[in-house]
Amino acid sequence: MKRHLIGVIAAGLTVTLGLAGCSKGSSSGGGGDSKTIRFVAAIYDDKTKSLWDSLIKTFEAQNKGYKVNLEMVDWTQMDAKVKTYVQTKQTPDILNYNAFADFARDGLLFPTSDVLSSQSSGDILPSFVDGDKYKGTQYGMPLLSSVRLFFYNKDVFKKAGIDAPPKTWDDVKADAQKIKDKDKGIFPLGLPLGAEESQAEFFMWAMNNGGGYVDPSGNWAIDSQANVDTVNYLKDLTKSGLTQPNPETTDRKDVFNEFAQGKVGMLNGAVFMPAGFINKVNAKLPYGIAPLPTKTGAAPSTLGVQDFLVAFKNDGGKKKDAVSKFLNFFYQTNNVANFQKEEGFLPVTKSAGAVISSAVPYDKPFVDALPSAKFYPTGNAAWGPLANTVKEKIGTAITAKDPKSVLSELQQTAQKNG
Image 1: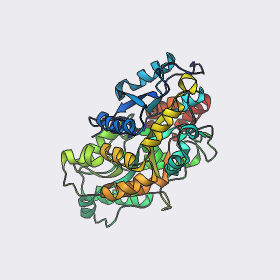
Image 2: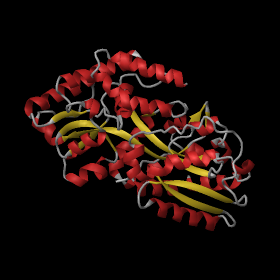
Image 3: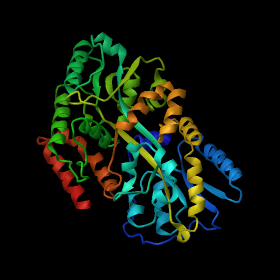
Image 4: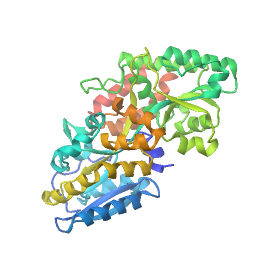
């Protein structure tokens, strides 16, 4: 499965590059004439380069005189590379990355409206657009996406006498108790709150209780009552023996593997579960997929994660036309659909979503969930360092005597960083 999907997108990472000292102004990194652009793309798997090579070959054939110089960078090296690009003013003209607010804050990027046509930008799923903005202006263009749904083991449910996946938190607890009573060898609920991706697991539960990292105005709200109630609910499940032992130190990959092995009854899963975990262990595992349960049974939300394309204002912006041509070429329906289908991610445009939903039936419920997806506050430059702190500490809230104290500490960190 996709190394990056598992390691970065699915982990919901947004990194901090420590770019506060970067100066504004144009870079000279692009080089060359105004029709030659430099595109730095991330390696998602072995197919990524060939997919971009093919697209670039077609683009250059359709746009005589224009040239795209492609540089592929492994995700393990990407953070350091990007930091160097910016510090040495050698930024590419287009970058595929998982953060952009730092660059937007420092005036390094074209607003999306400067380089993407209204037709192309209007095709981007609205649920992504808010996460593409910095201080109200869109700078990021979604390249790839992932959302989460609830996975359950049909055999485990049948054995426990459960007819349907849970819709409410009360259902989750009741079903988990039935599983525990029926089979002591099964962990009823997988709850990964270890450092790998605890910020995502917490967010999925919190958003379905009316909570989250920010309030509707975008202000930090980590210690909200809804979040406190969410942690207390998860703490109760853990103390009741309805999860795997020690959720606060359990990483996502561990419970995903245990679900694939038939050892976990249900969990918040991801679109890459079959290819990344289940099929490697038991391709015939009888699992079902459902919306994430909510506290009250209200309409569910889901976690959306996206990687971006961003356009740098290099050389005084003289390559704006070439950058715009290539971006609008990429965001044509078939180009987006083929790239995302081949890479195994979810579409980021409405037209590509229609194509992929009909071509890949497994993806349809995930595509259908995209409009209700909620995203990390990536438009806030403080999110990067905060996310790392959340990952380290949020799991400890379920073991703390006073969970609110942990949330309050995180709230204070968020407010201090902006």
